Amino acid sequence: MKKGQMCEGIVEKVKFPNKGIVKVEDSEVTVKNTIPGQKVSFVINKKRKGKAEGRLLEILEKSELENAEANCPHYGVCGGCNYQTLPYEEQLKLKAGQVLELMKAVVPNAEDIFEGIRKSPQQFGYRNKMEYTFGDEVKDGPLALGMHKRGSFYDIVTVDECRIVDDDYRKILGATVAYFRAQDIPFYHRMRHEGYLRHLLVRRAVKTGEILTALVTSGQTEVFAGDTQGDGRAQEQELLKGWMEALKELPLEGSFAGILHIRNDSLADVVQSDETQVLYGKDYFYEELLGLTFRISPFSFFQTNSLGAEVLYETARSYIGETKDKVVFDLYSGTGTIAQITSPVADKVVGVEIVEEAVEAARKNAAFNGLENCEFIAGDVLKVIDELTDRPDIIILDPPRDGIHPKAIGKIIEFGVDRMVYISCKPTSLARDLVPLQEGGYKVEKVCCVDMFPFTSGIETVCLLSHVK
Image (tube, rainbow, N blue to C red; front, side):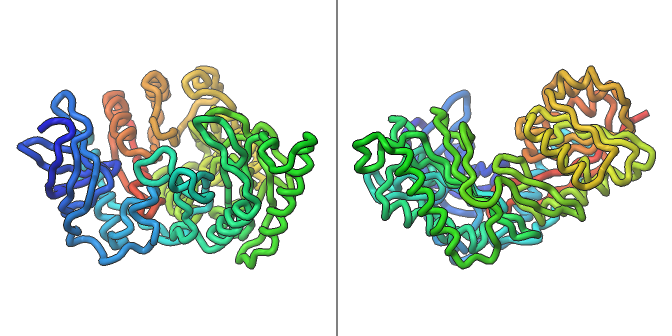
């Protein structure tokens, strides 16, 4: 087997995240975007140190697990979903099996303590946030707005029939791309750093129905046709007003809390703000979660599946157990969602988060909800943990995808709390971190998955650890 070789085989299993395993010449080849049981053709594109990766060319035969048709017309072209052809129950089995396999490698009695997977209350239309990208599907083709084409860094697919969002998103996307096509406005070329249209951000609250939409552009107003007098800014305001009016006319189920224009001249392909202009309404909206209200701005972190988040946090809260008269540390607290859900039944909750905007949002939300026993501190957990004056009885860990810094794990262990609850959005990071936690005197008591991202490879995992004394 060598690089460039064309191969065929049966996908024996799929490891997290989305890594199909195919046997070729007594060797294992990883082929992404596959499903167990499929017969696939692929080309070897990486081979080193006894490991090989293949790029999927064609699905020759479907798996017995699959439905006849995908639920979404963009499936296979858009790079967003992996399992559209799998019935939902099969998706759950696949994800639970992937997590259990990872846990068995690091937790001695993993099969005995694994509590399976809890489903998302909604399988379709569950996302409450989308970041769409402007571009073209083929070079010099018509303006597109949507998601990256599978396997491509540049090509964009207009996903106006996407099934993981509700109809309001599809209408906003469709109206936006139609408006800017009619105005012949160019998208921003990431390599040449030329053009105007960059991203469209849409957020919608499930409980309140409020919608926040932001058009993200460069500051290159000279791209507008007829800008011979240097009045590009005036033309830009007319253009934005027209877009806003087009959106306001849409027959939506929800209602706009705000329509924004965000200017971003960063060379990096990220959604961020150099300047934010409110075209209509306000720059935030409200969502409700487990009886609490949260104010959300364009860049606030908030779980992308609101109803799924309630399942996740109820699971975590049940694992946390009795908190009366106890001090709880919520490390990597984000906007303080789990801290605020815990605080009504705790003596005090201390949240630590490195993103200052998230900390400020957590403080405002806690005040809005009348929670006086929450304290939120901005800073890196690794550094802040030495400066905390409170001593915790329980620790909640909800780190980013890469998990916890090894040195921070050591400091967390030193607190010697009776219970820890680890919430993970990347089970491979959880598996890695469980090794030093167990070596530091903790025993894994329970592990449970919560499916927050139907049709994709994403999965949340909740783990309860107790101190062995």
